[in-house]
Length: 221
Ligand code: B12
Image (cartoon, rainbow, N blue to C red; front, side, top):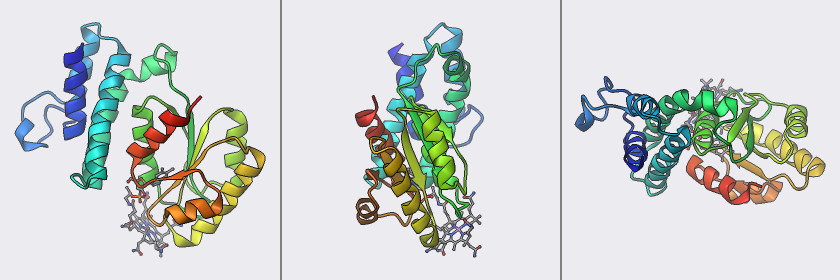
């Protein structure tokens, strides 16, 4: 069992998606995350064990990213490897056989169409064992509020990439905090700083999706 956790973690941390993938060159002709996950399930390994491998792998690449040993491109490839595993676990997640830790609602704020970072955060949070409700891009405050009413107990994340949409982020955060003072609000995106986060009353910000997962682990439930 531990062997599969380690193999999956390694494929994810190194970004080995499929056997036929040429990257990384030193893992050429070795099974990737896709094949290892399929093999594990065929041998009766519990899907939750594969999720443990996902978390360990993302933990490693997340730390490498924090310490500047990995770039966003590495995160993207690792997320693709993680998705290859999640594809196999999805039916078990949907049937409820594998329990989620909690719910995370995320969206890009009104007026903003950038979604690459948001999608990366969504994927990594999913791999961290949470159910993600992705509201998409250009999300008005009313849609955030509607989703929070529908998913009590969730944590919410807002993304913004444009300085001109940061005021929309502020409006949404303030409205969320007014309607749901107990809901934790996380914000992110290239122009977002710790100072902005504090000023608008959000609870947490990071440029690193791995730290978002750590925040969720600390604050869920
Ligand atoms: C790709 C891109 C686009 C694509 C978007 C495609 C898509 N599907 O997302 C397109 C071409 C559509 C686009 C359009 C525009 N863009 Co643009 N775009 C970019 C670009 C090159 C990359 C953004 C990106 O995806 N980065 C990679 C991801 C992984 O990084 P990220 O989003 O920052 O996310 C990371 C973290 O911030 C964090 N994170 C992100 N969200 C969240 C949320 C939470 C909760 C947490 C915890 C963390 C988190 O995690 C991620 C992983 O580390 C940037 C330049 C740049 N280098 O940033 C310009 C940029 C953001 N764009 C810019 C501009 C001006 C525009 C346009 C206005 C251009 C125009 N004149 O039409 C339009 C606006 C359209 C709109 N209304 O949104 C400017 C913004 C300048 C400013 N000061 O506001 C930038 C900075 C380019 C520049 N240097 O001028 N753009």
